[in-house]
Amino acid sequence: MEASCFLTSKYFNKTLDLVPSLKPRLPIFHKKRHSQRLHGTGGGHSSVITCCNLRPRSPDDNAEPLLKSDWRSFRARLIAAEHASLNSDTVDQSPTPITLGDKWAHPLHEPEKGCLLIATEKLDGVHIFERTVILLLATGPLGPTGIILNRPSLMSIKETQWTDVDMDKMFSDRPLFFGGPLEESLFLVGPQSGGDGVGRSGVFEEVMKGLYYGTKEGVGCAAEMVERNVVGEGDFRFFDGYCGWDKEQLKEEIGAGFWRVVACSPNVIGLASVGSVGLWEDVLGLVGERKVW
Image (cartoon, rainbow, N blue to C red; front, side):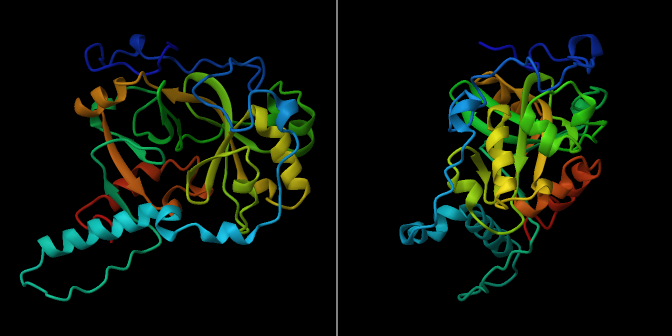
């Protein structure tokens, strides 16, 4: 089993000696260990997925049920309605439909793909994870994986020793964010044009509606999509490193009170929020007394 970057509650304490340090690792995006936890649907070799499957949209694509494509909003409305009924002094036989705003968040009992892990005060003093907001990318059989969203960028990609042609040509000026202490390079892509070319490419994994992730094997396809005007250069956020847990480890840490588990709307963690040091406070503000509305 791959070494995890977190400590279980049985071994956890705040001494920095027991927490992975943020040592500079150069070259970034180069000679990294490919993780079996994180992979695109196109496979593990860049030569296989440099050409994207950008097929035209077929009529059958419109047959996807709304509940499947936007089930998180559906669940949030149910939770908001339940909360409203519990706080109502009268019994309303015909309750008013709940309308969600652009930004909402509510607690979850169990972690799931696309949820947020919000560090609690028990992680204060742990320099990597203090006040972090982690987006869970996957919850597969090898254990959950995610990336830290709210650490500011300290360098651009061109300041590393990355030598891939697509990266040098297309993304070299893009900022590089710290995603976690485990070695793997990946990126988020959130198309701002409203098209679905990213989802139809077959290369990137959907995290939530309108937000996908890819590994370094998908950089060639990402560059091709920019050249074809499917997405823009600004629709990507690149990360060095990620976070991972053993299969039951995250549940133990949540039970020990190290993390709050939160579901949120895509607008809460859009690309503009990546690197924002205020994201931790913003999410906790949404998961206040007003919950999801």
